[in-house]
Length: 77
Image (cartoon, rainbow, N blue to C red; front, side):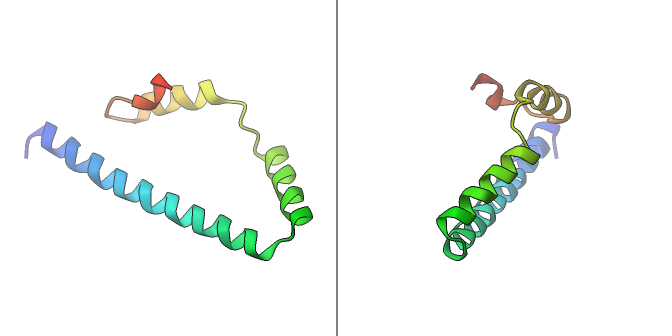
């Protein structure tokens, strides 16, 4: 198998895994929304944002660019 075909195959596998992970995360979120009341949900969101702030976007983009063998199209966003 040529390198290009191998990369394409790996990309397809990665896409399938990412899709499955996203579905599991959404299912988990939906289940949590069924269980928690509005105040509990807001408390959970506040705790999540406090412990895992999304303030290192540039660092994450740089890391992805170094470990991803395929072009990172998300850098355009």
